[in-house]
Image (tube, rainbow, N blue to C red; front, side):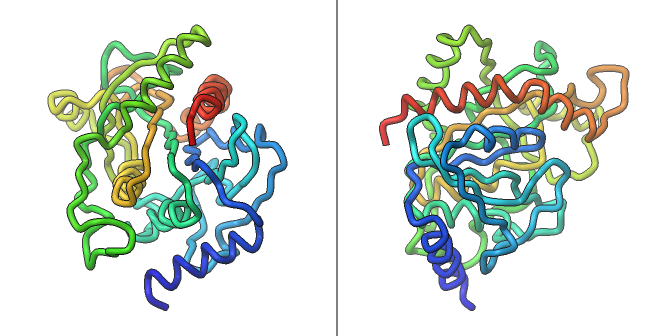
Length: 274
């Protein structure tokens, strides 16, 4: 089945299963899947139940779509994402974002667990993504362009919506929540970066580092979808502290601090005009 035919088939199946269209999409990163529990009138569909979708094998990722009411909006959540390090292709990684775009979302909130590169950051900080650096060595738009989704050379000068970032900062102020702002560097993983690589990232201007998000944002902007990105700093990157890094720590901090991120995302959704 051709690429667009597969996307259309998956979109039609979700329309049939859910019976309604989402206004916004949310991608939940490692340890952050708890936001799906706040969704009212929730309906869920596993990724493996849809044509063209690959299952998520990353720890802490349920691998399903959840649709319902959150922040007064009809929202479609990805409870778990796909990563390059799982062996998925870039096209497979962005398939669910394109699927959400075909279903009609007008805004996408991407969240992730990230390592702190900026030496002023602390574990548990929330960082509003103001830009990113793609160091994955590839791009989801490589290959024949899907003209029906977007133009061949999409502009990325405002990858992260200034209007949505302003909403997030205002909501954080109302909550009394400190919200950092910085640049996210996306690498492939699954090995954590070396201390030398982290020093390189700091020189390049990165404040946080992770193994996701960048492909999804590129695919969303290709379709003209407004994007808001928020990182939870779940560990300090290699060489910052005298300790080893572990995936278990990422999941644990995600659960511990996830409630603050969940409340922030829900508050931003309430303020969105969709």
